[in-house]
Amino acid sequence: MILVTGGAGFIGSNFILDWLAQSDEKIINLDKLTYAGNLQNLSSLIDDPRYIFVRGDIGDIILVKRLLIEYQPRAIINLAAESHVDRSIHGPEDFIQTNILGTFRLLETVRNYWDDLQDAAKRRFRFLHVSTDEVFGSLVQNEPAFTEKHRYAPNSPYSASKAASDHLVRAYFHTYGLPVLTTNCSNNYGPFQFPEKLIPLMIANALEGKSLPIYGDGLQIRDWLYVADHCSALRRVLEAGALGETYNVGGWNEKTNLEIVYTICSLLKELNPHSNFHDLITYVKDRPGHDRRYAINAMKIERELNWKPMETFETGIRKTIHWYLNNQQWIADVQTGAYREWIDKNYAGL
Ligand code: NAD
Ligand code: TYD
Image 1 (cartoon, rainbow, N blue to C red):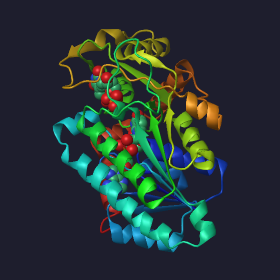
Image 2 (cartoon, helix red, strand yellow):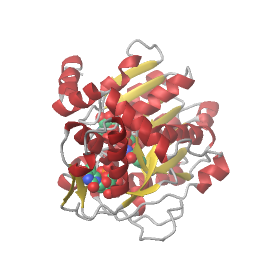
Image 3 (spheres, rainbow, N blue to C red):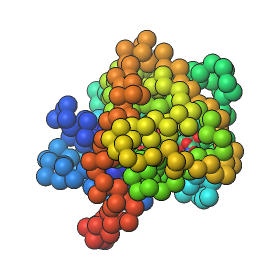
Image 4 (cartoon, helix red, strand yellow):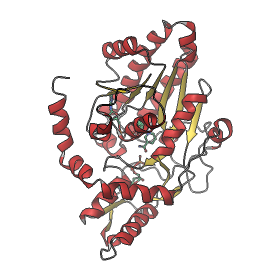
């Protein structure tokens, strides 16, 4: 079986659903259920014997040790993190705790477990650390996209904490020989993304007739990847990635924030011709230290592991909009916090 951390979040829940749609290998999901963890995303698995949920912190050494000994996973996919840049600006502490200290403690616990494995299990074991392109900092217009060799230059507390975790993962490979793999992925979008991030926030606000807040001039560029493509890249790296290597994952999809928001407005208008969503666009104060452009060169993973994204932005954004339109109760539960009441009731004492 495999152990996924942060599996109740956006990418984690997509990863678990995709994994179990293609494989009968069991999954344990270790998730602390912060505001970003939502078990409703995985409600279809409640009675599935291939899926085990454990509420807990990646930094809880006793708990993680117990899980490793009890379930003997052949791999760990580390998705648990604090992930939102704006939150990291308002309160960096949680980012340091989970992304740096939590990852460190997880690595330490995993190293002790791995050290004691028999030879065959030891050779087979993998620790896949999921990171971001934001560790590379900001590009100017026309500068080549990030390759794996680009120097780290993180600019926000979020990206700095992720960079620190990447360095620790690297050090555990070089110092202890822990069989690690790291992926650095660009901005994801798709089902189950918390409506604090650009794309779901814009869709949710537009559906409610609220303003669509564009930071600064809206000409910042991100490289967007549909979440199912990220999940397939993670499966591929886990299956065939070379130990100690890092792989950039991206969608070859550079767009300005304004382009994204205009596209969302136009697609919503196709479905609802009487509303003028574009009128909701509002320019607001820029984010401090706002990175201007991210772009991923994903040639290495294509060349070495034969992975390419399947979705274009045009197909992926349509699927995403349809998902949010069909799941307005999910948005409402997240916004009102109803899902948290459910979690508190169901997991009281855990
Ligand atoms: P998310 O915020 O939606 O989910 C994070 C999950 O981790 C939540 O379920 C939360 O409860 C859990 N968690 C937080 N702290 C924990 C802890 N200490 N112990 C156990 N669980 C904890 O994040 P996401 O967007 O799904 O991102 C997942 C990973 O992918 C993160 O490491 C992020 O840095 C990385 N990443 C995200 C993107 C993106 O665009 N979303 C892009 C590249 C990389
Ligand atoms: P976000 O989804 O927070 O991802 P990240 O900061 O990790 O790239 O933001 C994507 C881009 O959209 C980023 O340039 C900030 C911008 N943005 C807005 O203009 N308005 C918003 O309300 C949000 C949430 C983001």
